[in-house]
Every structure is written in C-alpha cells, then in structure tokens.
Length: 438
Ligand SMILES: C[S@@+](CC[C@H](N)C(=O)[O-])C[C@H]1O[C@@H](n2cnc3c(N)ncnc32)[C@H](O)[C@@H]1O
Image 1 (spheres, rainbow, N blue to C red):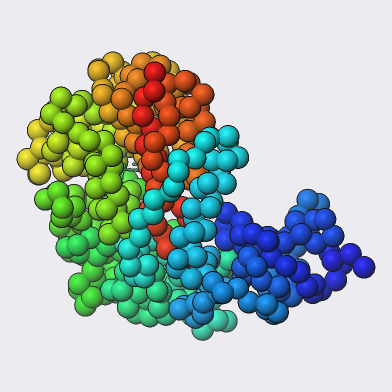
Image 2 (cartoon, rainbow, N blue to C red):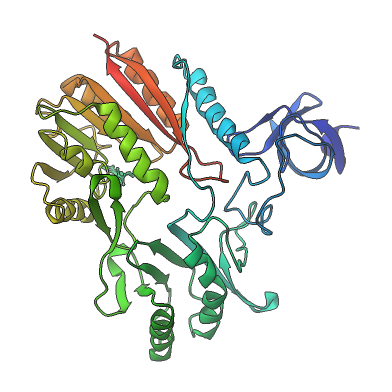
C-alpha cells in the first residue's frame, strides 16, 4: 500500500526544510514532517497529500537526534509563533547557516570560506508582535496569541517565552480585558510595541468602541502603565487613548550614544540586542571615513543611517514610507546629527530616480522580504560604490540579488553573516558584504 493511503508510516528524516520541517522521501515522494529532525527515524501521521509532496506530523520518535531538546514552551507544536524550539540552540544556528548556504548554492553564488553568526539570549527577545484575538465562548472566552501552525485559529496564550517578559506577563490580563469589551468579537488583533521607555498596545477594532470600552481600555493602560492606542481602519487611524499624549517609544543604540524614537506601528527590528550588534557589524564592515558619502536604501527610522553619519561625510537615507522618513529626520535632529538627509521614494519603482546622482562611495540596503532587485540595478548602473552592505530578512531574495550583483561583473561577495534576530522561529536574518572587483 502507498504511504499516502495509510495513516502512519515509519521513515528516516534526511534534512530540515527552510521552514523547519523534517524532510523525508517515502515511495519516491517528498514529505515535510512537522516536529521531526534530520537523522531521526520517526513514525509520521499524514496531514495532507499533494501531487508533488505530502505533509505529515511526527506520531512517535523511534531514533532520536542528539540535537533534540525539550521545548521550553508548552504551546510549542500548536502555536505557529515558533518552529524549531525542539532543536538545540546551536542546532538552530547551524540550520540557519544551512538555509543561507543552500539559497546561495541554488542561485550559483560562490560562498565565502565561512558564514559568521551573531546570536544573543534566545528567550524573551521579541519587542514587536501582532497578537491575534478571537472571542470563542465555547473555548472559555477570549483567545489572545499567535495563529496556530496549520490553520487560522488563535492559540490562546497565558505566557510566551519569546515575547519580552513584561508583555508575556500581560497576556492573561489582556484576555480578561478583551472579554469585558462590547466589541470583543470585532477585535481581530492587538499590536505590541515595546520601547525602552514604555510599552504600547494598539487595539484594532472593526466596530466603534463604546464609552465603557474606552474606560476599560484606559483603566487597563493606567493599571499596567502601558500606552493604549485604538485603530478603527488603516495605520493613519491609530489614536492614543491612554495617556492622551503619550511619549514616543524609543530604543537606544548604546554603543553609538543614539536614541531612536518610533511609534507603535512603525517598523523596528524585532530583537533589540541583535539589532544593536548588527548595526555594529555593518558599521565595521563599511570601514567608514570622513570622505565617505553613504546611501542607505530602505532606511526606515534611520536605524543604520545615524550611526553611519557619525563616521562618514554624509548619509542619504531613502525610504518608501513618508512617516518613517519624517521620524528619521526627527531622530537625526534629536541626536544632533546634521550630515544625514532623507527622501521618500518608492524603491521598487524602476522609473527615473534622483537618489543615484551623487557620488556615493558606500551603500547599505535593508529591503523587505521581496528584496532589492530594482534598487540594486540602479546602484550598479549609476552609483558603483566601493562596497554594498546588504541586510536581508529573506535568504531567497538575498541569494537572487547576490547573483545579480556578481553577474554584473562589478562585485564579489566578501562576507556573509547570519544574525539570529528571531530565535526558535525559522526566520533568517542575513547580512552580506559585496566589494567592488572591477
Ligand atoms: C527591513 S525594513 C528596514 C528598515 C531599517 N533599515 C531598519 O533597520 O529599521 C524595510 C524597510 O523598507 C521600507 N520599504 C518597503 N517597501 C518599500 C519601497 N517600495 N520603497 C522604499 N522603501 C520601502 C519599509 O517601509 C521598511 O522601512
């Protein structure tokens, strides 16, 4: 009988997929097996069978990997927030290096001699999150947490090992708060943003809040000393509820003496410790001097721009969101940085651009998951800097863009580093340094 037709089958796990599932080959067909690790022999229960592959979940482990550990979190396996808590932390770092090297090999980009790794405390690191909310009386009330692994249900979390501890501690009271609200079944999500000075919660609601709802939210904010915002539609409708005029959130880049302000819905790097060290790596890779004019593409709030400006002649930050550009300008001014300027531009638009005119000697790019293909083409055609430091949250597009840079004939890959921004998840943050070769 074919494995697809039976409930449970024994197999050996050969590899780990980029999303953290064990990979097996059964009857010539690839299986992705949740909860399985390379080197293990497991009994697999089938979840879904597709034409080219099947998915399954470990039923029992027959031969266990030496890298297997007991997950710290009781929700692991159900909650979709983490993917590899069952793999030892050194094993996770090796896995992420392999995801990057596989992507580069797949894109025919020669790898450097070694891949560096940047890691920090792998627990309680997450300072930004979107918590799903569902009101399910049958399950005892409100569920607040991340989506389950294989469906759109919400895992009701009482605690979370990767969220910053003060936010994890709030989870049970948040559940109680949602249950009190008249809009409890019209409240799809709560955004969490943790600054060093304050924590903010943004309650997205699909129906208007009653006065009693507003009182309950404000009282919660006051009791837990947490800023409360409401959001009825898009990001522009985010409104402070408690306090009426909250201080902007901030994080510091201590090593650089910088404080960066942000609002609760702005993009900030999720892991503050790794972010500060990553900024340090990029600065050291760039070997800046006072002659350097630097272009920082996808600059956000100025996370890399400001530390760069402290060491260079000038920095131009380019970013798609006007609100972030305004914050970057404010952040430069609050930090007494006068040699950084910022522009709002769509960097996926391959029309005429005005950011590639100056003589930039060094370029930083830190794009969203879709990568920086169009922007890098501009950089190669019009700027040709000495070095390009590329920070990426998607190894596949990084590898694709690296192949473009190398095929241009002007750049070689000099350094590659995995920064473990998202421990216990399968997300991989990478930095690569390209040096001009001709
Ligand atoms: C990974 S974040 C990096 C932000 C910043 N470098 C940092 O470290 O905080 C990517 C940034 O790209 C911006 N972005 C997304 N699409 C864009 C586009 N089409 N043009 C310009 N910027 C864009 C986002 O707003 C976001 O700020």
